[in-house]
Image 1 (cartoon, helix red, strand yellow):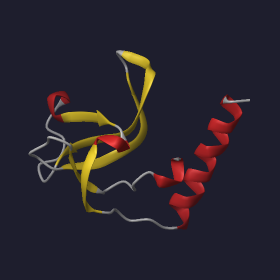
Image 2 (cartoon, one colour; image 1 turned 180 degrees about the horizontal axis):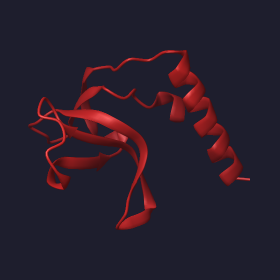
Image 3 (spheres, rainbow, N blue to C red; image 1 turned 120 degrees about the vertical axis):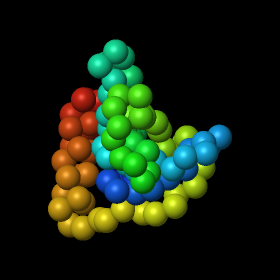
Image 4 (cartoon, one colour; image 1 turned 120 degrees about the horizontal axis):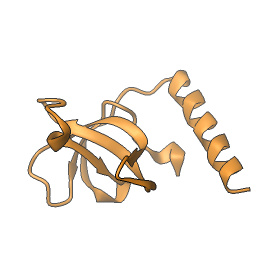
Length: 92
């Protein structure tokens, strides 16, 4: 599943959404709910981060449309492999 996550910089429209979001983080948690993990953190597109009111946590299943897929390279693939190792250790 981790390998299916969209790259940072991807632009998406969520189900029922009217404003696009740009992904700025993956595998994120909210300080108020540290046990709940989300696939992505995003901010408004094209505005970017305007404060906590415009910072959104969401899951891949919440995406209705992928408008633009962000940059991916071997460095990202190595990063995802490391994340997969960490999750495998947590499940042991």
